[in-house]
Length: 499
Picture 1: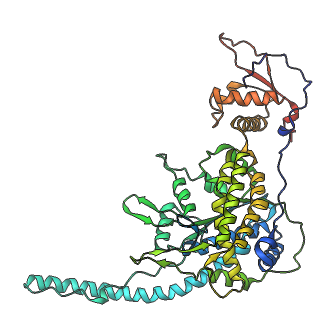
Picture 2 (picture 1 turned 90 degrees about the vertical axis):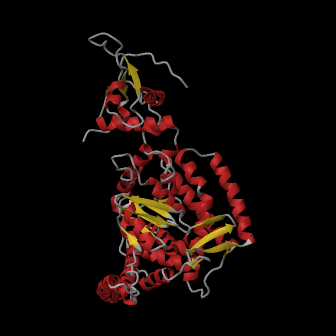
Picture 3 (picture 1 turned 120 degrees about the horizontal axis):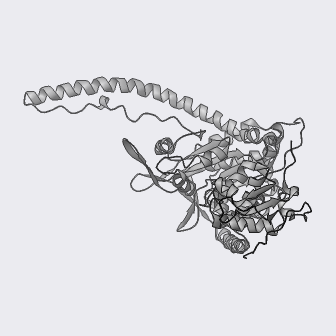
């Protein structure tokens, strides 16, 4: 809608601004269906872990989902039917204020995972010591053989065969179950040696996400990570070194972020689907109290050890590949019904929430595989070979009753129309600068993304004017003549009180 503004003299008598600009219309967090989805054994562990960390159970759950998904990694993929297969990779985002104990909650899972990694690395370090001895012998054998070859060629004799001792074999690779930081090039090397996958752990996700586009030539890590979520193949080109190809990128991601930093990301980032791949968890803070009970550390360490003991399959060319866990016929029927529900949710959504909803069928398939293995970890002897209807129904329940409402809460700012988002961004600028009056030129001079052109700024001004947040006022003529800048007064109700 196009508005024609008629400059008016400034008056201190303002109407009440639209309520949506006076407060954050934040939906409440949904209840976490722990027992109904994860069963009594895992629900009890999650509640105990949360209590020990003075955190809501949502945060240990964020760590559990990503850690279990990356532990299964490329060993097993879920296959509803031929032509559709999903890796169990999940990206989770723990959202909350600094005092909400996000990191301690995640550490309920990440600390045992690191302990498992240390044990695995100790075993490999013993192998590496043996290999190092063989490598030293190989150097001598290689040197001796080369000298023998030179003598044979000089004397016209047949060159001797290279001795077996000259080849120490591949150097044993130290497992990397969780990585706190690393370049794309380093991750590609790790995954080439550890094809099952790994887990990226970031204490603060905003810096990681903002730093993906950091190359002077305009390059970006985002394509790598978009492929990593889908388990697709990727080749990383390295300057001055051989390129590295990974058949199936499999990197889980877990980390934390503060609400205001998430809001900045949502309002300023392009929607290429990267943020929509995160499962957000933003509960209310847990009550402050001393824990009465502690979690079973042996249970979680044993579970993670069993998962990291899973192996990949090989194809006819002796290449590693995932085993495929198929859906039962009844589970396929439930999946079809869920996909119809998703289509309806899409018709009522916009922005980043629409992108998130579009990925829910794949998320449900991934979560079904993770739930199947969580059940296996509670005492089942036989490794799963099929995903049944009941397990998929639990995954669908989690998404419909928790994941989708939580996304509506977390991604609310990114679900607005383009003009509404620009208006909220402009209001933030007004508040940060404590402007009681400003001109359109004042905003344009800041050169802010989305507000740096007159055609982008005008819709934002229109929205705030219609909402009685600002009002156009008469501007003094420019000293040199010409068209005066558009001047606006700001409703005092939206300004932050002076400290």
